[in-house]
Image (cartoon, rainbow, N blue to C red; front, side):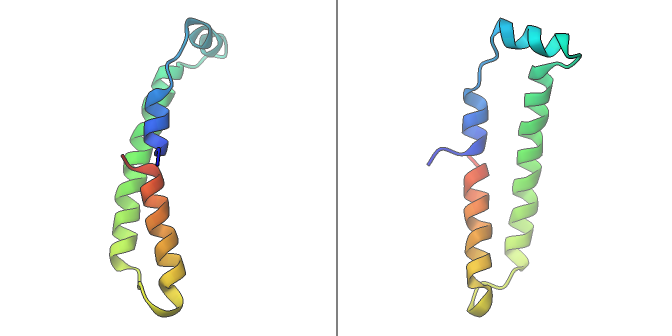
Amino acid sequence: MTTVRQNLAAVTLTANAKSAGQAAGVNLASLQAQLDEHLVEAAVLLKQIIALHPSSGGDATNYTALQNLLAAITT
């Protein structure tokens, strides 16, 4: 499975994309770096939630969903 972080790392900004960002007053490379940093932070938070969340009974489905979310964003 390809993760969100892997997909983000695969994005190579073209000169055209950089120019479009500059025209809008933003640095797309900086925004991508911020997104990656936030994904790392989200993974840390998810790990903490998973460590505290019940994993059986009526909570099993939510626990699995949290694990799947973590897998989707981590490398």
